[in-house]
Length: 80
Image 1: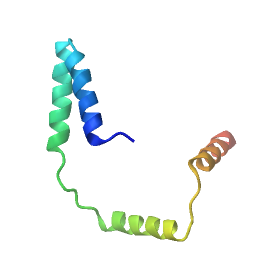
Image 2: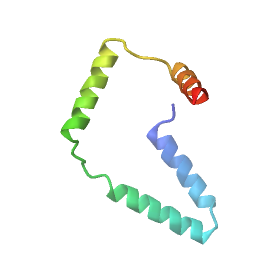
Image 3: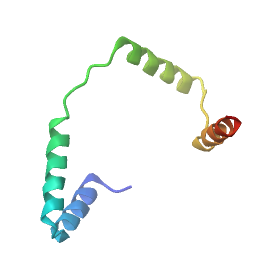
């Protein structure tokens, strides 16, 4: 897994090679807006309950693989 420094340096290298001004302006806006949106968001009571239920499912081993979930979804879609 890449470290944060490796990812950052890779992005810097890629950004340095970009010549398209419009693309760079759009990228700057994206980075600026995402960094300003890092405020703390308060969860609702219902969201907290759902997260607690998820934690209980994990603790109790009530899990399925992504592959099994994909299979269920396909079966459900095909039944429609």
